[in-house]
Image (cartoon, rainbow, N blue to C red):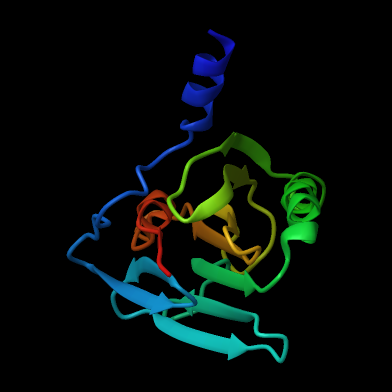
Length: 178
């Protein structure tokens, strides 16, 4: 009975990451670093490759005012299995202590192609920027079968009329390949 409960709980925390992602008509798809992810059409994609084989992707709206503005971040790190657990804990601690965010959910989930996966949703209160508003975030911390890690963070200001970015849609669209 305990094993069944643990299995059910491990699957909680949001989307079904199997099969083809459901991408809304007003979204495009980014493919790179053996991952596919949806983002609002017309947004800018900036990539950086690191000398150690890692990379980062930053997807933002063309208009980055007012602030805060929506953002999608992907960070891929090769051979980072030993750091994975500390990175997962550390990011959560920073959200709570630095951003004063409320953790809405924090679940271990199943993602095909991942050895371990954690999904976190949080809400940070209105703080700084040219038009301060609360920010909702949804994120994944993924440990791939080969020891590489991938972190996906989606942050969306909760500003009236600023609803191009739906963090849940973006995170639910994540699909690992290769």
